[in-house]
Each structure stands twice: as structure tokens, then as C-alpha cells.
Image 1 (cartoon, helix red, strand yellow):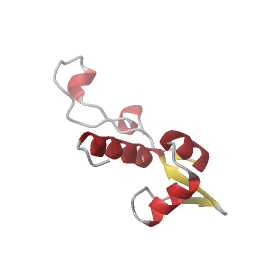
Image 2: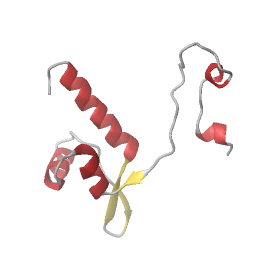
Image 3: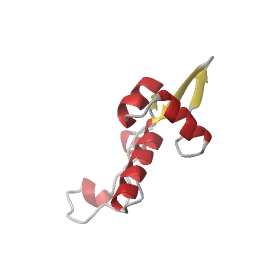
Image 4: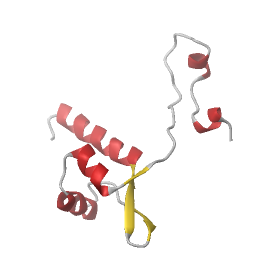
Length: 91
């Protein structure tokens, strides 16, 4: 897989064009452990698991044995949704 296949970008942007990018840039998937999720979101472990159960927070992924992790991009998307809700006065 080439680097461009892992990180697709708008061809116009690659050639120095001034038009806005219409193709989202994809980052490679990255798993993050609970400690990092807590640091990123400023939420407690119990709140994270309660919100997961209620469908209000991304679900963790089993990564072996009893270990779990979260997909970083899903946690970031949740944070952006929380910020958007704040802007609309729903937070």
C-alpha cells in the first residue's frame, strides 16, 4: 500500500491549488487505552463505561485477553459532537 492510499488527499491540494479540499483526509486507525481516553475526555472511568452502556460514548474494542481499547478517531468524533452540542446550547 502506498502512502497516498493510506492518507488520501484532494489532488488539488497536493498540487498547491487554492480550492477547498472536498475529500477528507483519513488517518490510520489507532487504538488508545483507557488512561488516554480519560486524559483526552476529562471523564472518569465509571462515566465512560456508563455512557458506553447508554450508547452515548464509543464502545471499546477487545484487543486480547481482558484488554480493551478505543478507536481514537471515534473518541475524537465524540468530542467534536460534544463541542457542536455546546455551540447549539444543548450541552
